[in-house]
Length: 477
Image 1 (cartoon, helix red, strand yellow):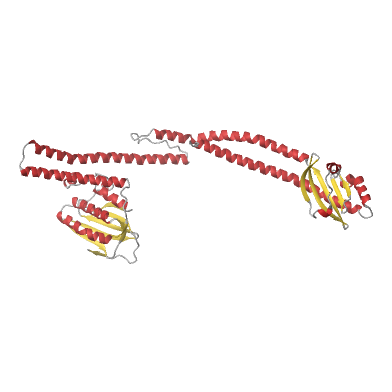
Image 2 (cartoon, rainbow, N blue to C red):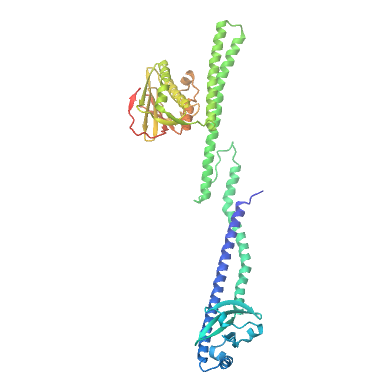
């Protein structure tokens, strides 16, 4: 089922809101006029009711019921004023003192006072084809009770109300039609920049990610939308470029060991070799295959991290105990490179959320990196300390250091500060990228800093699992 466009929905909402508003305004206006007119009529009825009370009070002393009836008939208009002919008056015996012709012809029963409440009752009725507003009540005068019904013709009021309703029902559809057309046109103007941006985005492909949208200088949501889309395109462009560089670098790195393996095999097959020569060739092929296997494994590790397939099951671990367990292997690696190794740990446990094997690999990568770029005699040091809610691991060396303009790039894949030296030592240029990925999976950060003329420090910061109560004492291991 196709959905309505934003343009149509905006117009519908606008027209609907206007219809509700007009309907509410018309109903309120009609009710106010209706109430005002009937309030004026009721006020007139109350005045006539009081006039009737006074008339009866004046005529009651010294007059019989017959005489009072004659007075109603002879002096009704003169005594009570014009418009008083629509009246019914009945005493407690059921004698009708006066009854208008309209009531008599329509057969309206006289108001018996004993059946009426003391409070006036107002109602609208249609009698003999005429619209009336009536009040019926009981009057107590000089110890006697009378039932009184007064009425006023409201035909003119109904005509006035009808004349008010007519324009509303006539003009409302016209106003709504103009509102729908105007709203549809205005929404088209408002959404035209969105259509323009949609068309521009549709023209952008993986081969034209350098294109950007025109940003309107309106300062509204459309400008922010264009800026946001351009920012997204910047990120996509950077990601595609990174993927392209990664693919090219990976192909280059894999081509070298494959070429060496193929060359060694072809040379060995050209003529008969001695057993030692075959053994040396197979040794060279095994070394190149191992290097290629390491590269493929590193590539798979980074691919899983990029796709968030390698989400780690983090658990509370003692960082100090983990590094103390890992240190002997690192010390052996440093000694094999002619370097000294030292470890500086806090005296008390330092708990972080992490994965033991993955953090051990992180330390191995950083130690191998320090060994590659630290000529003997030199020194590598692990130092662990805490600050507020973080735990920090510093891997220090006295090597060639990292230039300030290279510190932001050394975590890029296949980036080397000294490519020839790294290749001779068996590096692939992916170690620090994997280290950065590991730290990111542990919700931490890693930076490279200089230590002066020579040496560098790689600082890893991890969130602690629990705040410690006692201050940390630092003691060398």
